[in-house]
Image 1 (cartoon, rainbow, N blue to C red):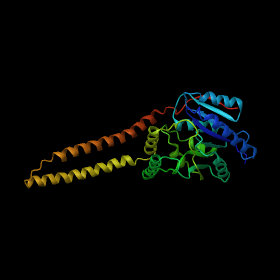
Image 2 (image 1 turned 30 degrees about the horizontal axis):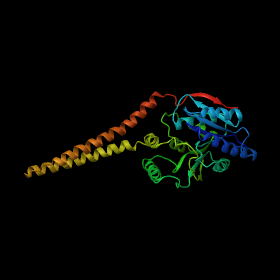
Image 3 (image 1 turned 90 degrees about the vertical axis):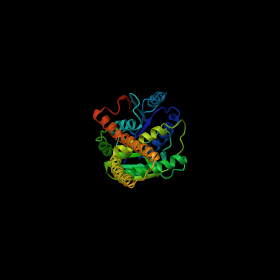
Image 4 (image 1 turned 60 degrees about the horizontal axis):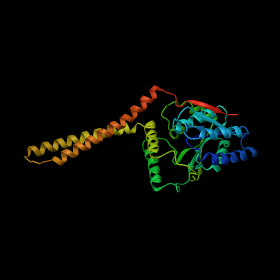
Length: 315
């Protein structure tokens, strides 16, 4: 009991939500400290991912006013996943437990007590899983369900309806640190660690203020990372598709030879043009999928740092 907990919260242009977020998290952490659930050395670690507004100024002010708040400033914007890993790796040096959550108050903070309880029951990783998607639009709900099913079809091990709201023990973080790939998809990496895991269900709230930092474009990019980082099935599908098209072309050739020998004359313009467009589209699609993998290999072999820390505030 009485372990040191760090809440790790990536922030990008979150000046509108930070006042309310810091207030609620302070009340939550103070209550757990007073009850003896966590150590007084526990902290709320805000990670500024190269924000362009006053996010870092607010983090610095909270740190000066109360040592409960810590701040980590990255040299420039590296993306949510890299910012989250930066915070987790920094927290690993000071904490026994970390819980990652978003700054927009959509993750139910009341579930934190359940996370801690599961940890004390022997779990190294606890996943926060949404109990429903009632707050999502029909489009987002439909695409999310389809995405998780598609990932499983591609052979990716992933916890359905789980984002990045999770608890990780120090031992689990040390194991995570051994995954040094540049293309990060934590929802796929963490299940690979192993160790004992558990699930805590929670209701996801509406965003308190501001706009989502994950528009459709970023969601699609994250989805592509999830597929291409953990599965080679798309490449194998290309091979299968190539074999099928080859067999179909052989049958088509035999058919054309037969009708020619029988003296039938068919204009065939529509068939020829349709075949050209179809095959051209398939070839471009296949090249695009191969290009995604080559691009990932290109990024990995350069082995550039995933993030660079500018400032770390911690009392």
